[in-house]
Length: 223
Image (cartoon, rainbow, N blue to C red; front, side, top):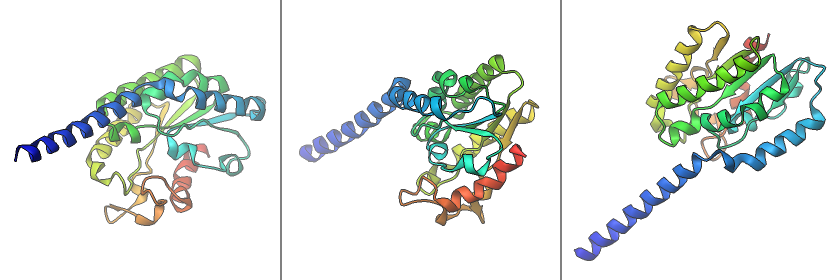
């Protein structure tokens, strides 16, 4: 009996230790430094400053959205998404990934990973407000679009927290005419459940069908 209890204790300790380790690492923006530098180098050659620029930034749902430039050829599109990021990470790199491109419009997707790493919606909203404040201070005329945290198969058990966060995003945008809210949550649902055919094997990242549902929502704000 004592041996079984000891084994159970050790397993619990290991699980908690790993979670805390991952959570601590997830709070350190410097883990993205090399990726951010690579994004900057990429657009040092690709960015055409003579065109009106729209920045898409945030976590992997943005990073993996390929072909945005071809979808909106009349603008210069910067995709500065960095996978695994949270709102606090984007806050740390707002200058490098957003402001340096002098955008007329910024689409932000953060909150997905934050909720998974047990951040409270209030904390995510606070970081998001700081990002918005940075953009407004540097580029007062820039329109900011907050993309709702998406539903997914892998994180459906956290749906109530995502819905709560999205309500806060929506309320924030409603009270500020310079902010817009892109509701991709509801478009990915069918009979109040997330559609299962919108994701790759991990149940988290979207396939082409998922992005096809996002496009009309996003296009509304660009046109």
